[in-house]
Image (cartoon, rainbow, N blue to C red; front, side, top):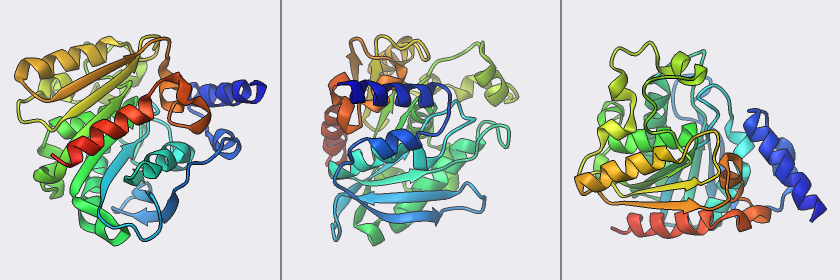
Length: 285
């Protein structure tokens, strides 16, 4: 129990401080999955690199899950979220974990364009790693949840990147910000404040009846991104008749909800099993 408490502290501090999660990844037990691609380029910039994780060697036809990590659009790297990639791959997804450009190098919408390029790579190359490019899913935590959900709802980024929209089967957002106007914190002011149409930056303003199925997960003790973001987006999607599911985990905060993907802390909530069930069903729709 003391070891688990120490690991939880390491993970929570790393996430809250936007520092590397190397210690957490090193110390925690690993899910059984295989990294089949490392440092693969998907675009022209230095941060256009991704890693690929497979349920097992030689798999064919696995649904493809592109996962975006968080970090307030100013921090993070794919190597810190190995625990999440391995967990999702072990549940049957060919999991693609891309980096993307961050502030101050870029502002909105460049990181979404990067995300769309990563999905285009998955569309073009997933089959080489055992994935089914006709079944692409998106997911992310915090700022990464924003990226995943905004890409799912606003098709302009995918169209510009040449992604076939019919291949996007669903998305899952973990503790994401989806309705944050007026801009009132430094992170969003610096990242979004220069964009001339602020309303267009909000996922809640892109709801549509033909959106892919979206799963929204949140903890009711999240003091970083309030639960109202998930509530507001879910209600807006429901009002449009779009397929959406919302799960709120009691007693779970902003860091704990993503750490729940790791082996030691799955008691924080059924995040992994809820995501797996929803996204697998979406992939088969």
